[in-house]
Structures are given as C-alpha cells and as structure tokens.
Image 1 (cartoon, rainbow, N blue to C red):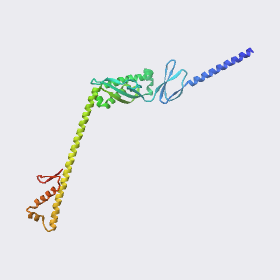
Image 2: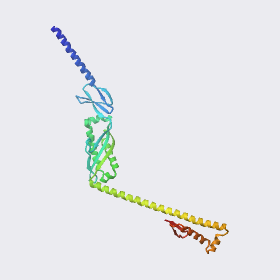
Image 3: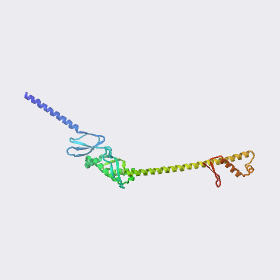
Image 4: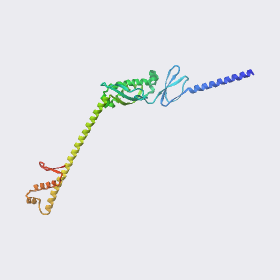
Length: 299
C-alpha cells in the first residue's frame, strides 16, 4: 500500500509540474506579443542590458523575444505650451524687449517626431527628449523677444509670430518636424499699454474726422453739380419760352423783331427780358451775370 501511495503521489506531483510548466510556457508566449498602436512608433529594448535594436516598429502586433519590451514614441502631432494653464508644459516666457521693457509672452507650438531620427533622439536624450525640446525652444523664443521693441510687439504682432516660428525651426528641425506656432498673448507694462491705447484712440479720432471732411466735400460737390443742373434746366426753360413766344407771334403774323420795336427793345434785349422773367419764377434762384452768359445759381 505504501508503494502504491508513493506512486500516485509522484504522479500527482508530476502532473502539477507539467501544469505549472504549461502555464508558464503559455504565459511566456502570450507576453512575447506586444501591440504598437496606430499613433505610435516602437523601439525594442532588452530589459536586462538596456540594449536597443536598430529596427523601428510601426502599428501592428509583434512577437518579441523574452525579456524584451517596446519603448513607445508618439507618431502624431504634439503640443508644447508656455502658458499660465495648469496643464501647460512651462510658465509663460518672461524677458525684456529691445528697448528694455519687461514683456511676458504666452505661446504654444506643434511638433512631430520623425521615424528616421528616433534612434539618434533616444541615444542623445533618452525618454526625456520632450524636456530637451522645452529647454531649447524656451531659450530660442526668449532670444527672439529681445530683438523687438515694445511698440513692435503691439503694432506688428504677425511679424513677431513669424520670427518666433523661424527660430524654432532653426533650433529643433534637425530632430523633429516643427508645425504651427501660436503667439497667444503679449503682456506689456500697464503704463505702456495705457499710453498705446490713448495713441490708438487719437489715431482713430483723426481718421474719423478725415472721413467727415471727405464726406462734407463730396456733399458740397454734389450740391454744386445739382445747382448747375438746375441752372441749365432754367436756361433751357427760358429759351424754350422765348422760342414758343416767337412761334406764337409768327403764327399770328407778328414777327419777334416787330414786337421788340413796338416795346422799344431790340430782339436780343427782348430775349434777355423774357429769360429774366423765367428766372424770377424760381424763388430759390440767384442770377449771376457773367461776361458772356448769365449763370443761374439755385440754392
């Protein structure tokens, strides 16, 4: 009985050993597969020696050797911010303008890692590459701030924005792609901003007055054109009346020259008299006698 018991005991221990071994093998096999997501790159690393393989992995499920793992890097655009926000990478930039005024600038920009540069990036900065980007970009942007005066920050913001983006490209483009740049806020001393606002208000007021003067000139010119048009109409009316009178008299067998003789006027004087009569019918008109032709000015 003792032998039989020991036999079953050994078989039980062997079965347990086989079971444990099988579970271990399955676990090792399962753990030998790792997923790289669609928005990642991967570098395979030996967890004991820290050695990095030269192959760069993209999206997919991979079987890797035991005691290896993936170091993961984002392949999409990322943002670095220098703002007062709690989630910001660092505080806003604080420096001096070219003319010595203190300026605080909130900025952000986008960058993307390049697959072909991952090995160099990791070998130089490890997984702290983002901290390196922050230090370099902060220094480059502060230097740009010192190239502009306070009024240039206020009046030529797009020019400052372009210079900052160019400085980032020069400093970081060897290791990553630099995307868009945002100059989010500029904080200059209150005294400067108040003086600038007063200057801007005065400039706008001057512009408004210029517009008002131009409008008045246009309105006056319009009145002159209208008066000239009315005068022409009156002259035409007077001439038409004289012509009509001449036609009427002729129809009645009386010549205009005969009528002029009868009233003691020549033909020219009679026509002038008739023209003046037409003018008098326009109460709002003034008669200005020119060198050759009378001019009607209607107000």
